[in-house]
Length: 225
Image (cartoon, rainbow, N blue to C red; front, top):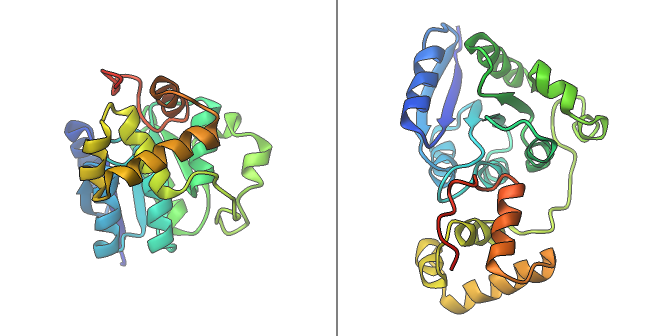
């Protein structure tokens, strides 16, 4: 029997280990890797080529939404199952627009998580019962019959999303430049473009936007620079 390979992307170690132990009880599922942040998840997908990634949204360094976009760009055959504690419309909308074809609350049972992984492996979409009730019809229509997201235009580039997250996490331009391996002037340009595109004119506003969009959790932001 061919086992379904799974990568777990979750920054809380105890939660990630719990998922692994639950999934290891299933004969047809195999956890091939664990990532602590979105950037690590992207790199591991390129090396391990898992069938399904169980992805948390709010993670340090690179959030799950942008990690999903980058993974699907590099490995379009991989399916992403978003697992989060948040159930508001904004999170669901952002998850489907990023290319995820499954969405579950962390309160879901282990058997529902396993079922979701199996459904995604069959090229189906999968939304938990509670999420399915919240998911607007227009969002369901954004997925084709094979569970692939229909093309959408994202007004922020991948690099801008990375810079936005680091700004919202309280990083200064110098720190962002070092983290992303780019120049200070490039960071400043990305910051300007973000403010223009989002019609936001200060760091506090960018941070609030990042929180409302599910890019970071409100508890992440401790200081605003």
